[in-house]
Amino acid sequence: MPVPNSTYIVEIDGLHKTYFRTRALNGIDLKLERGRIFGLLGPNGSGKSTLLKTIAGLVRPTSGRVLVDGQKPSAATRALVAYLPETDHLYPWMTVRETLDFVSAFYADWEAPRAAALLAFMELDAARRVGELSRGQRARLKLVLALSRSAPLVLLDEPLSGIDPPSRARIIRAVVGEYRLGEQTIILSTHQVKEAEGVFDRVVFLREGRVALCETAENLRAAHGCSVQDLWERVYG
Amino acid sequence: MRLDFDPARPIYLQIVDEIRRAVARGELAPGDRIPSLRELAQHAGVNPNTVQRAFQEMERMQLTETLRGQGTFIRGDPDLVARLRAEMARDALGAFLREMFSLGYTAGDIRRLVDAALDEQTKRGDAGAE
Image 1: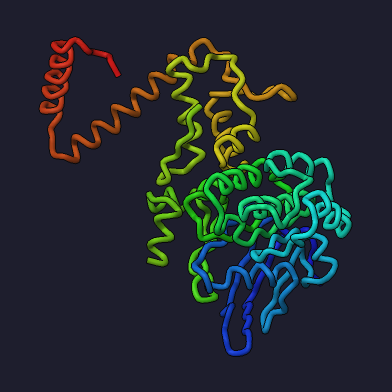
Image 2: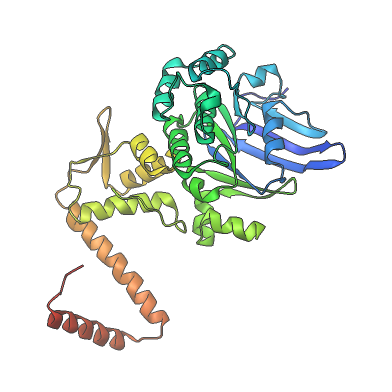
């Protein structure tokens, strides 16, 4: 019987995932403490999205074990996880307001006042149709959806990718500003390391479906005398 | 408060240094309130856990004090500014001496070079200028 409320919100042992003949995850062992912000770093194809989907309970492991809050991913753990997918999953014909109403109906932990505050911070007009929004605006809306829940585990898959620098800065400030100190765990995958440098407690570098490095960001800076961005270039360069 | 981080040093230490410098320069006075943890984190785009660590460190160094429900303040200690200036001067001198010794200068060389540099500054009339 797994013990709930352990130090770790996510525990992964020997995780493999194979899609037909492609190995996406190739033996991942990882324990993620509660109350921290993790950076999941790695180039395209390194397994970041597959790993996040597995934690979210959307992808079944080929072999190995994944525990979220001490339980196998299921409908029960999905209630604990707020997941921002990399893909654009919003309906273009809905307005921003309708999108919020639609998504909020799925979740018991939705916080309407927080959603309203985030919408204002992200400078989104509730009356606009999603189809009329720019790419950066849609990325900001997706973040509003993920951060308006009080879920203990938040998975953000490439929230900074393919959008303009001002939107990226605003997204980072929203993540940091809404973060519940000591309660929430955030896993943010990105290849935009430079912008997110100061956000991470711990960084996990993935390469070819394996963990290449897992260390606290402050230790990396102190031990190597260089930024996480520089280390990225060393690990992948 | 300017927070332009040097990516090669732990961020929590840089936050501590920035506050120390502001007090030593007189930009923050004993008894002044500093921004809250959340304000600082959001303003600088930095992890709140990192800012919290900086706050703990400043408390431990007796640089700040937290009053429940009111916020975090620079300690109302009349000797604080003098103490910080002395600490920072010692740090700056230490770094300078380490660098000079590593370049192979002796104590005598360093004294002469410092005197000569100070004389030069006085001659140009900009002693103490930034």
